[in-house]
Image 1 (cartoon, rainbow, N blue to C red):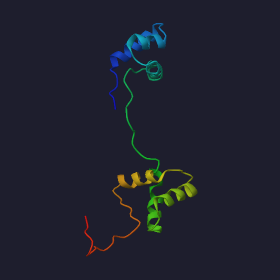
Image 2: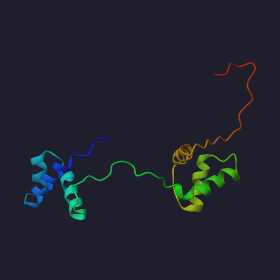
Image 3: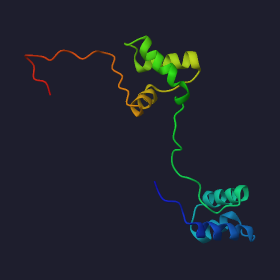
Image 4: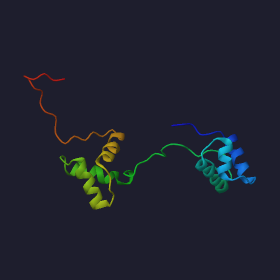
Length: 128
């Protein structure tokens, strides 16, 4: 992910817009995108700050609020697939998610979810 532009550039762009220059003209003058200049100006009008907003994911998951429900599903039926868990989540909690979302949710918590028990080691076949 790219770094944010510096506050000095932001300040010069906003001052140009406030000085009567159009957003499009200010963007061309400072070699930035028009939507970027407009976004900076709106942010400055709302907060009065030239500082960039925080970048990246703010953390958390839509499944955080349903953690207890998902763990109870795992205890309830040991052979339930992730797709079945997603269907139950949609049916009972009205939250539609992809099974991979549930996998990432469990993986971040260090929970491995296997439908089958481990098989005994084969004596005749080579195991990797």
